[in-house]
Length: 132
Image 1 (cartoon, rainbow, N blue to C red):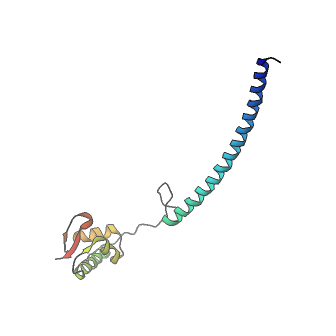
Image 2: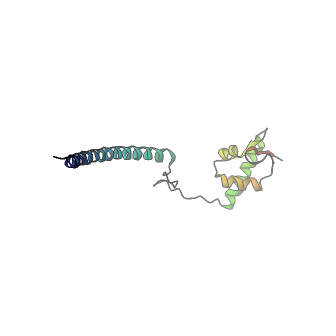
Image 3: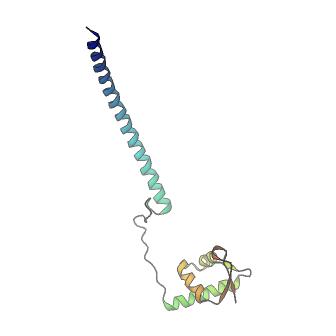
């Protein structure tokens, strides 16, 4: 057996070993991927349970709440309620506190504040509402 034949024999032997190792590596990676997918599915379910949203941002199934529209009477009553809340707050009150105390949606409270007899100080987050 000459040197060239030995080289070819060694190459063939190592090619077979490399093919076996590649197969084992593929099997291991497939198992790791399956485990990772199970972990991701579990974490996704926990996230959706806590936030009510899917990872892509839209609401999760079964969370559809119809939008409530206020009638003219309800809007007028909300304005009076907001004015009463503002009047009761000696040092002024923030928008978030007004919305929380009324229980109405933020947009409804915002509209009520536009027509209510209140004065404001501050800008954006620091805005405080006082009675006139």
